[in-house]
Length: 273
Ligand code: AMP
Image (cartoon, rainbow, N blue to C red; front, side, top):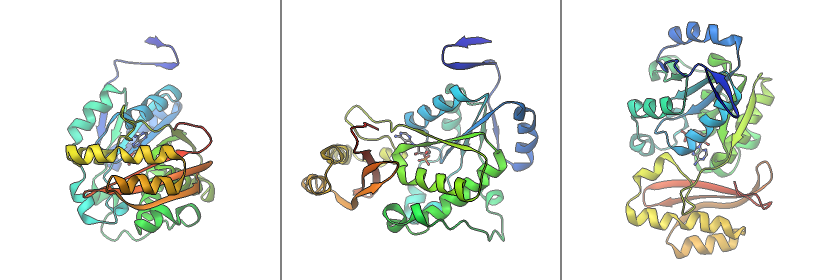
């Protein structure tokens, strides 16, 4: 055992496992239930934003589970789903480096088997912003999260502040269905120029990548009108620029850069997440 400050001692020599089926998942988790389980749900294409959630979860739980599931139900547009990076082997490498114990990468046909017909339809926090711009998005998110929480039964699940409305929807799901887990939130990880890391950033051309920097600059104004003007000057068309209460007054932006839709937000209380 290695004692790492701030991180619970664990057996570092333990091999990371990847599990693809529910039949394998259940017996794999049974012995681990003696300790706490932390879950980081992801859609894969892992980057340093996911890694920071792994770090947070690693420090707070005996077992770290990462789910990797490109959930078609939360994509409003087929082209967005088709263009989404999908490389489980690369995700496994990053997860292993981040000391993940178990990657759960369910098969689509088992997650949503033929005849699947029960969906969670969140209202409240799911209305407006992404809920309006991407019809059905939060229905897909909430349904997948409920299934993952039920299968894995973690003590804690970790979500990024970058998707602040998603955090609000998941907290609402936990509250409304009396789920016994704690939702923990990690700060948004950004590139040095301020652009929030996203699995979709790889799709940006160099010119688009440079124009995308207008998004964090727009958020930094803290003002919707100034943010809109700044985005317009960079030729970005926002789906929305809006003030919302997402665990505090928040300025949220969704904008297309070429074919790629990016979202970001900032808390307006002097916080820098
Ligand atoms: P995704 O794979 O995009 O569904 O993201 C999985 C989790 O990682 C979600 O809770 C996201 O909010 C979080 N996440 C994505 N990008 C970032 C980022 N740049 N900083 C922090 N968390 C992030």
